[in-house]
Structure formats: structure tokens, C-alpha cells
Image 1 (tube, one colour):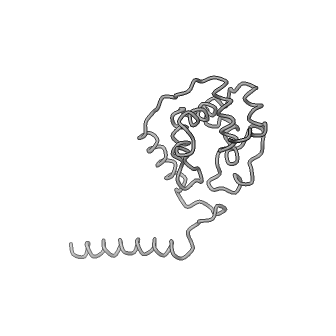
Image 2: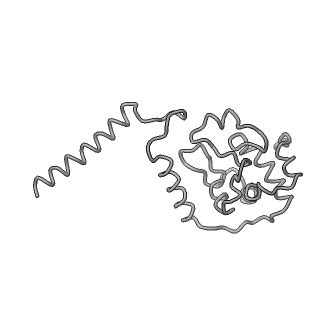
Image 3: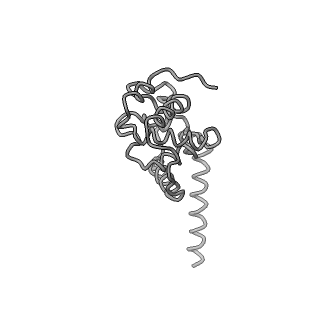
Length: 173
């Protein structure tokens, strides 16, 4: 039994020493252009999914209509488009240089297939280690829901909203 305990302690010390060496020797990928670590994306995605489920559903506080989408489009252009893109536009240089790459929310399904409350939590709280900031302290609850509903319905927006998205942003106050 004594040999087992000594072997266990030595094994733990070797793992800790190997991790310390990996972190302090410059071998860990830290640049956005580096290849991801094994299981990095799977672990991060799982942690995000579990956290959002823990936060639970919320009910939107704005109507799902064209005025909401238009207000959401202006907020999106000012706060989100630089990373998440606009309809028919190529990704910006900022988005292309990020790791992980931010999803281009007006290409393919975007987040229109996600529950709206999940999109709300991501916009409000942000996502660590992705470059996605939380906007809870910068946008009001109404503004967060306006952007959320815009994105939740991004696959079926009225033409007026699509045109508003690609028009130059309105001046801020």
C-alpha cells in the first residue's frame, strides 16, 4: 500500500510539473493564429452550454415586430457588426483576426435556430476567452432584447430591416 501511495504522489507531481513546464516554456498556444489545444473547443462549448442552461429561459420584454427589428439593427451596427458582420458583407479584418472566429450571424442559420433567451444571455453576459464582451452594463434590457429578436428572426427579416442593416449607422447621441 505504501508503494501505491508513493507512486500516486509521484504521478501527481509529474502531471503538475509537466503542466507547469508546458505553461511556462512558451509551448502553450496563445496567439489567435495558433492551432487550438486538444479538446479546447469542445470543453469551452460544453461549459458555455451548461452555464446558459443553468441561467434558464427568460421571456422577451419587447414585441416581435418591424420597429423592434429596426431598433435592433441600429444597436447591432454600433456594437456587434465589427465582429459578427452584416448581410452580404465579407468578415471585417477584426473578425478575421480573432480566435475563435466570431460567427457571422447573417450567414446561413446564424442564431435564428437558437432559443431567443440563449442569445440574450450571450449578449448580456459575454463569453469568456472568445472576445465576446458582455453588454449588460452598456445596453439596457430593452436594447438587449431588440438585438436578440433581430438575430432570432435573422432568417426572415423584412426587406426594410435588411436595407437598414447595410445602411451607414445612424449618429449616436
